[in-house]
Length: 116
Picture 1 (tube, rainbow, N blue to C red):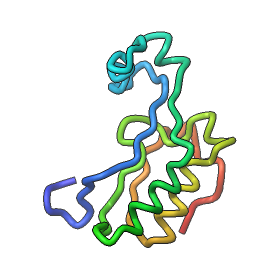
Picture 2 (cartoon, rainbow, N blue to C red):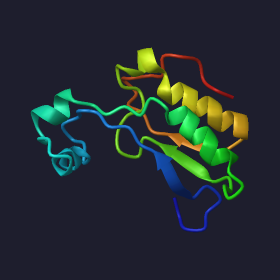
Picture 3 (cartoon, rainbow, N blue to C red):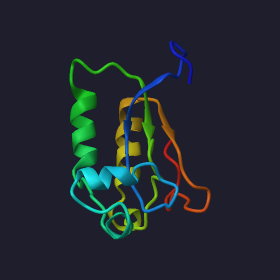
């Protein structure tokens, strides 16, 4: 998205997965884990993400802007079926009327109906 454009994205919610093409792999090494098996088998989950997002959006300093979900990897990891973190974050964004973009692998669709 171009600078100054109507939908310029400056912030985002990021999820990571074990895709072999993912450029987030080296980040695992920064955490003291391997970019190989650890990246494939260990995930980090911020279970309070929807609450943290709600707090940020409610802050007086927040100005609505397009938020990108999954700037690094797919929003719909297998654990999403149980935790519904992406779904809950999208509901918070809808509640505040904040614009959002979602990048997702077409082979891993959202397990729930879209948010308005």
